[in-house]
Amino acid sequence: MADLAGIALSGLRASQTSLSTTSHNIVNVDTEGYSRQKTGLGTRVPQSYGGSFIGQGVDVESITRVSNQYVVDQLRRDVASYNSFDAYYEYAVRVDQLLGDDSTAITPSMQSFFDAMQDVSNDPASIPSRQVLISSGQALVNRFNAVYEQVYQTNETLNI
Image (cartoon, rainbow, N blue to C red):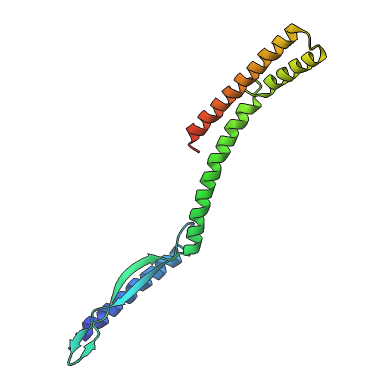
């Protein structure tokens, strides 16, 4: 026959643990970042007695954190998105700095090239104007290549 005192004691201990968990939740209700806990109870293996089973009491199987899995999953996705956007933002800032600085940007070389084209269109027979156009074109190509290389290096550095 089952030990009635043992069964009762297991119930009392399980209830005591549940009350402790509840009091822990109450104490931490205003603690930022705290997640409520719950006590998981389970039956002990019943004992066979005369063709039937007699319960042996209850055990505390777990104390688990209560959370909304949807919210946790959404938070993980949002953090991953934030990190991805942050990396792209850093990349965009570097490229903006590269293209926004007159010493490294394409704009001055393009302006010089178009000024040389204007000079050649005004005086197509002028050999010096043509040579300036050719050298301005080469300088523009070199500037494009240098900017490409810097953007490529930035891309490699950030591993995007």
